[in-house]
Length: 385
Length: 127
Image 1 (cartoon, chains in turn red, cyan):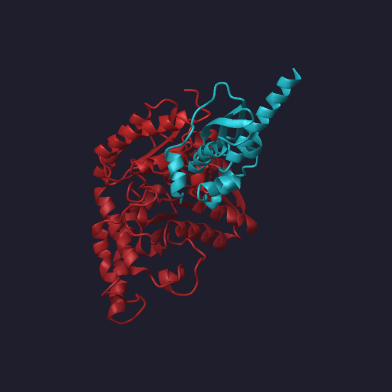
Image 2 (tube, rainbow over the protein chains, first blue to last red):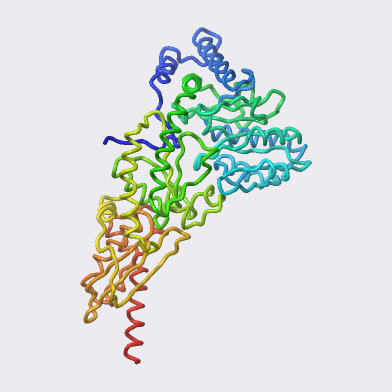
């Protein structure tokens, strides 16, 4: 068995069609989109076309799309941009305990500047309840930021319902759609969002580029000053090749998402059912409101990093929420927020499927994992097998 | 990120298991932080003749447990007691900086087993 990549929630390989679309803008069409001569005009035209494509796929207008350097910038821009622009209206921001750190840390950084932050809990499946959002809203709430689907456990949030509540209240609503762009329908009207951030490299596009939808009439204080690009909301010479790649990747994903989601869901469920046969194994997240490509389990009595090293030796690339891989002494903040104990959370394994995933790969993984788990358990002082 | 020697001890750990009639047992770490090492020693005539371990933890935790069993076997109790976490890491040709603090507990586990051995010895001679 050759190498198996099962970490598509971390990043995806770029598609050939995307690379082909981008290549001219690294070479012959290298112009700066702000220049008046031919090279500049052609680069500008490529930007316009990409913006139209992204806008259409989101059900937005072209002037509501701001190109960014990726998901983290989009989240930072949405949160800090709103905070600085509307701080005279109020200084309360609501988010959830399972957000990506790009959101969570952006929101928490505002505490140093006198903002008040409410971090909402989630249930054991990782769901934010619309009722808790409603209870958290105050007259001085200016922004709510809840992710569309979680990157670790794949739980899809009731964004539409939450959006309706937030809008009724008169606050702005941002959703981090990094895990759902190219997977779920992202119509900003249906989702009731004012801001939505996404990233190209999660959907078979290039790294270093993303987009932020910002509804018409919503003001944003820029993070990056220095030019008139992106209607003065994001200065800097545009990453034309990257932006063209983003639009192409999103377009292809949209065309294929129906059939691909069906295929991935079948493979995902085959993998989950196979892993559930291992004793003392817990599936994390919702089995109903779940991304079609996400599998996340905890194997009791073993630690995640040693699991990953063993998988790597078998040619399988995966990830874990153990402390060793989170870069801190604590395991995944998402699993802890869902009520898992530290002990269990250290033994988590995330396998995220993608375009390259086949049934043969799933079966190979299902053949190797029980052997690795048993071997590590035999070595574990916690296991009384 | 791990040296070849760490990977060798991680993939082929030496002396995994328990010693039923151990002369000393030591356990350090906790599940909360993600590393637990439990170590059993057999002592004959003040010389450590056997060491076995069980570890819950990352690659570094397993490799350090494995190598300290090799380092301790054949040493006198007093000699084994001087082994430091730093020496364990050096014996493995180094550990990543982030692992030096959290997963490098093997010398402490051995120290705890020796302490247990001494306590048993003291209570035996007292009775």
